[in-house]
Amino acid sequence: MTTITITKNSNDSYSSIECKGHAGYAEYGNDIVCSAISVLTINLINSIDSFTTDKYATEQDEKKGLIVIRFLEEPSHDADLLIKSYELGVESIFQQYGKKYLNIKFRRE
Image (cartoon, rainbow, N blue to C red; front, side):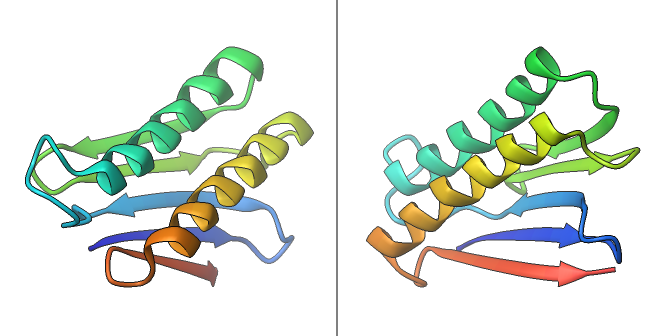
């Protein structure tokens, strides 16, 4: 199962997104759920990098299926919109494939 944890701070600004684990929908290389989540997550990072000047750090570990994005400052309006688009995408995957393969958590720090 893949778990996505979206964290906001007390100002209601995004502070991090962690995507961890392999969905387990199919064998490695054929797992369309894991692929879709990965594409959305990597596209989010690339979009923030290409379309904003936001400062962030990333961490990744392919074996663990881990990708983490940590914002070093409050995300801009554009980054905020990109993250909301990411949420919409992963929610769509969750709606289609259910909680057997994807868990989405929202937390406050």
